[in-house]
Length: 407
Picture 1 (cartoon, rainbow, N blue to C red):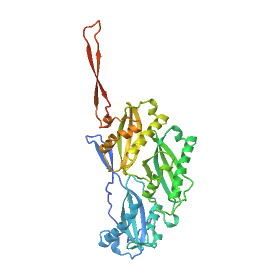
Picture 2 (cartoon, rainbow, N blue to C red; picture 1 turned 45 degrees about the horizontal axis):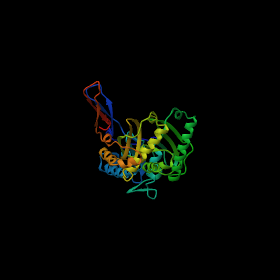
Picture 3 (cartoon, rainbow, N blue to C red; picture 1 turned 45 degrees about the vertical axis):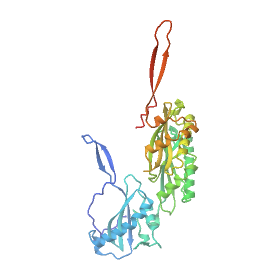
Picture 4 (cartoon, rainbow, N blue to C red; picture 1 turned 60 degrees about the vertical axis):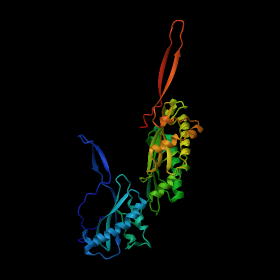
């Protein structure tokens, strides 16, 4: 419920929040793009500081207001930054009498998923030493409120978990919640996810989880909604690590860099590379992610590249995007922690790994990998016969391995 306005309520001037991100819009004029400010997302928060309210706190321009607002901001910002990577800042909207009631708003990146009111209340209350103290501030835990949520009526934690399965191929049956294929995949996904959360976070996972599937370049995009009845704080980095560190127990080839937990994600650089194997013959089935030929070759390529970068602590994974003809070209994404490498380094490492590829029965075309066009000259001599008195020599030029994608 909204608080009753009193004469002591602080009135702040209306402001325009600075844009935190921009959206490009196609322009009909000569300007190629225009930008539109996107406001941050927000969740309200109010609580009471156990001190006497003074009239000076009703005016946002007074030294008293500025001092207290700065103290509150400095205490709250680190709390929410620890739990939500996309948290921007807390905005102090005003102070009211009773003792000192703080009215504030938590601001989040426009593309993020803000904390729910229950999670806001839990996050602040869990930081109070002896249930009341936050730095130099004495706060009434019972007064902490976000929307209509207080400590007395907390709602279950909701986790929206998304990821892509690389070794499963999307088909129409996964759009039908009554199909055996849908129900089997859903059951396997929830058995794994709920087991990880129960063992590593909180056992009180509720039985009403929802799973949907969608098409991600013929790979399977999974979106799961799981509720947990817990007093624990929604620490998104912790939950993200928990899921990511347990992908090997899932029974699926989950793309780690695709995992999202309430919008929290691993920040990576995905470096696209095309690799040609001169001794491998392309067949039509390599265009089909569900074929045994695709899966077998994908597994072999994944293993050799994982082995090559095994000692690089910044390497996350390799993703097989597809195969194409000529002999066989593998289009892959090598994924590293953000800012730790560049494409030239990746190409250089792969180029120096001819032996590793050979040990897996691959003939690596290093010229193709480096975008080098090679020309081979073949000479054919046609001998003289009784019908002719001369001989003709034909020069045949053949271009091999032009990598148009390496630019």
